[in-house]
Structures are given as structure tokens and as C-alpha cells.
Image (cartoon, rainbow, N blue to C red; front, side):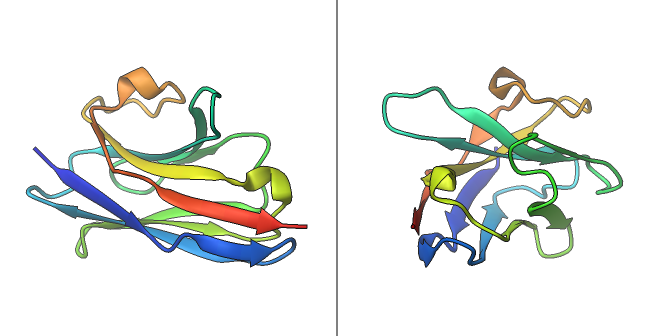
Length: 124
């Protein structure tokens, strides 16, 4: 199994930037499709971004396209989410996930391993 730990969350003003990291241990992330999801209290978890095993293809939610960038460094066993032009509506707990299927998916059911989440709060 792979264990995932997110970091980099915090409080930022609207228009600011944060970079989230997801450090993996236990196994290499190389065989996994990786994704970022987010969730607000009493709401369903929603897809944010995903990246294929090689990093050659990425996928984004419409709400973050052009503002967020997902990347991965398989040598460092780490996935990143660069978040720019943050908005108050981006306030969520952000989760990193690893999927064993090779298909890049927006569905959380396609991801097998999850981190514990990191809080991102954007003030207006």
C-alpha cells in the first residue's frame, strides 16, 4: 500500500497562492494515477485535478482551470498542487489520492488510497 500525507495548506487572502504537497511512502507513486480532491463541510467531495502516471496528461475541474496546476515528481515520490488566484470559494479540505487504474478519472471511486487532508482557507 501507499501512504499519502498532504501539507502546505493554510490561511491566505483572496488572490494569493498556495502550493500543496502530497508525500507518498510505502511504495513508489510511479504506477499510480494521482489526483487532488476537495471537500467542504456537509458537502460531497469534488474532483480538483488529476495527472497520469507519466505526468504527460492532466485534467482539471472547470472551477480551477487556469488557476491551479497539478504536477508530480516520481523521483521524489511527491505530487503537487499549485494554486494561484485563490478565491474564498476555494476554501475546503484538500485531499490527495492515488488510483491503481491507469485511466485518469474525476470520480473518487476510481482512487484507492487517500491522505488525511489539509485545510485551505481563503479570506475575502
